[in-house]
Length: 300
Image (tube, one colour):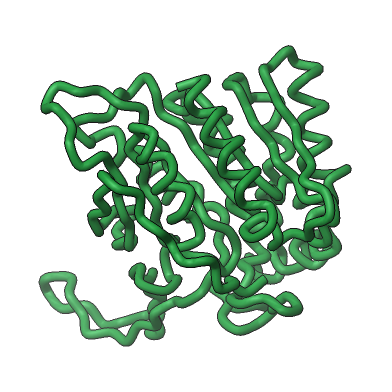
């Protein structure tokens, strides 16, 4: 699941991209804001936050963000903490440092890198929503959320619990994490971590085949976006790959769409034929991006 080399971004005319910092639980996230170059001071436009997947970065979503901005929206992409240009959480190496009279101490720390922590990721998305809401031209009543792959499950979890999200788009989403082969190991890791028999914050262990980074299995054991699908009430678009090999559509995207329809939620479900999971960024890009754009234009 390493990040592929995407086709290069061709910036549409009249769009500007500014690199900014989003602060999330004290971690500096590397982010970009895409907006129309000319906006009246009192203009109010829809806004969209875009979240990448496992091993991705803000560049995962740059073509989508530029497309949305070209239609008049303001879009934010960002890189999750501990990945690429974003800051890292710190872990104390000295567990019992000697404090002086000011409760200060000299300690050694470890910078945690390339960690897949779903709870930190949900907070990062909320921080990105906070940042977007603070943009002077964004209409806070017209905010959308877009997520891809593992970030699609994160987007569902956040949307189910944040009333600011008025429209949702996810593609090739990882939703039913409790049905993955790693779930049993995740339960074991949660127990072992709590009892001190496994690293409190793992690094370079439990790696998934052909994937970058370290999955925080103890945290993943208590994170399952499928349990939150029933809470979604906003119009939701789900796009899957016809030859999905990572997150079976019957358990994930298709299953979520069935639940939403049964709940009377406005939902549209598409399968792009003849593409695998990562094909959504290549042969599936034109359909996926244009369908997402139409969704946000219709519901924001």
